[in-house]
Image 1: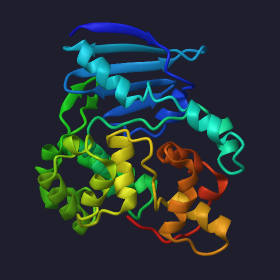
Image 2 (image 1 turned 135 degrees about the horizontal axis):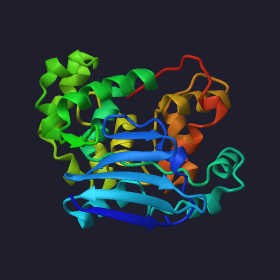
Image 3 (image 1 turned 45 degrees about the vertical axis):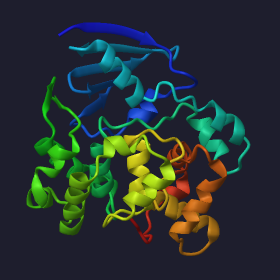
Image 4 (image 1 turned 90 degrees about the horizontal axis):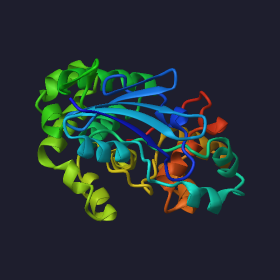
Length: 286
């Protein structure tokens, strides 16, 4: 398999450490400043960030050009956060978070179907529990990539497991059934190229799919920068604390509204706010 060593400087500030934390450890691993990832159909990459900000990448792939294009997308190398930083650097809520990690970026999954799995697994439960379910399904559905990694699965590969096997991975039966039905009915990879409002409306006609699930699929699967994580539990805690009352999903939409057209990236920063990370119960939505 051909090997290519690449050194690239991302567009705008870039924080690999902040962006690559908490990988699924099936399609990606991150340790000691090195991200290892399966890429596309035939690639494996090792990525590290030099002190000057450049990324040093070793890419092994049968088709290096195709794999490199895919890796650029998954790492969000060309998605400059500078406009958001400039527009809201004095924002009393978001500004301090932007200054703390100006290079934070939402890394993308290898397929939109993988993002859908993450969305269904993450509904109404803790991040740790959700990630455990995601890993179990990935180990069953995702093909081997070498180097101890697996490739992001297609919708057909996940749906092909069937509801019973997915339920056995810990996903609630109704959600497992809904995910299998959605992935069998819709071509999520194609939907990413259609108008966002129409896509969001179509997805929410599916059972067990709410605004948060749409946001996860759109932000992490398709790379839509304005796909805010409306209804995220952390944002619910933040919105409730700011309002001084039990929060509603609409409160998180209002919280993110000033940051359009970068509501997806703003969501990631706001989820790092101390009020969003407090341990207290809050009403959750899909």
